[in-house]
Image (spheres, protein in one colour):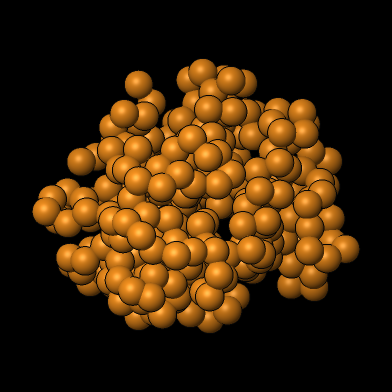
Length: 274
Ligand SMILES: [Cu+2]
């Protein structure tokens, strides 16, 4: 059974194996297919038309399935690997071990945002940015460069306390847990973290930065925590909602899985903590 651990608790060997699996997926051309898929959904998900991956109730189950697909691809390279999560309420500075050269590498240099060390730095030669929205082919970051700090534990708690999963109009204007976690409304959790990292992470091709997966693994864990706190609250909407994925409706691009199928993560993985 896959156990997803806090990245801060990974051993040196676990980090080494995870990085090697990332690099192998990249080398084999399989990594970039995930970037392409994510960007296609970012571009097509809108508040007033069909929306599946983002700004909609299925934001959480869509990313759960997306991460599962990616984790399975990693495990096909190295069966010992699991996706770790980044608890940005705790590891909240650019000095975190997450950003050390033996793991994801650090922030970008001032002049052009280019990440200069670590396995994903352009200079290492193993991480070309191929699926991109501009000409720059190197991984970029500006950790904390936008000036707004990462969300705090108290801010996370305020969102976990929201007992309704999602509400009409089921988009970026909604009240409820999903949209506050996603960040279009209120204290802003998920979206703010993308912006804090900067570089490609702040664009539709955000999976170009490996931290994408660790960020979303923590968002996914917060969904699990919300379910634990609100056992009587379920996925909404239940049925009959135009342009929106209802509980028992299948999701693109897989077309073989519904939100209802993905509510229980323990069928696929557990977390190191409750
Ligand atoms: Cu995201």
